[in-house]
Length: 262
Ligand SMILES: [Zn+2]
Ligand SMILES: [Zn+2]
Image (cartoon, rainbow, N blue to C red; front, side, top):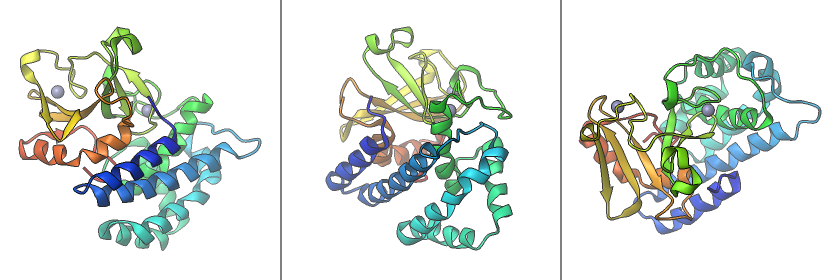
């Protein structure tokens, strides 16, 4: 599975050029991925510093990049986010810290700026071998084993790639880690009776499916890499935006909204 920031950016640019329906979303997401990559690189390149995993202690080292994210969204984001960016650019340092800490300890997928900013930080935490302290760990196997975040999406690979789960994995919405997860189980409530689990396709997106659960009425999207090995899950999930509209019309709620709010 291609997982680098560059692979994501390239895929967003490519899909934006091919996909009229989701073009605007993908152009914006491509811009966002570029800033996220810069935040990630900035953290990675800090000499003699590794994140502690305690956000209060790491904030003085990472908050300098937040205004950059705000300015970029102010310049090229959708109208509603541009307004929020302007407001946040006028907020005090203490208010911004509070926003980030609030999101860290009680994540909400509608907190766009905090989620987008903390994703590259959490990614670097996971890669640099930090220990996470203080985040509530609940939800069992359907939560990220590193940070306890909710799944952003599900992927299907060949069984050989993940034999213990029949090829299925989940990707964390907070730190982008990937962990194996059993194939026929709801990634929200753990329902495993096949009659309660539904899979929906549209011919337009052959390698993406809605994975819905009638017990908890939640869904996530699954990216089938056995059908399209070139897919970059995080980006292909965004590109298949029409499937989210379909799921919503059928009264399913997404386990975790993505960064374009779908
Ligand atoms: Zn995680
Ligand atoms: Zn469920």
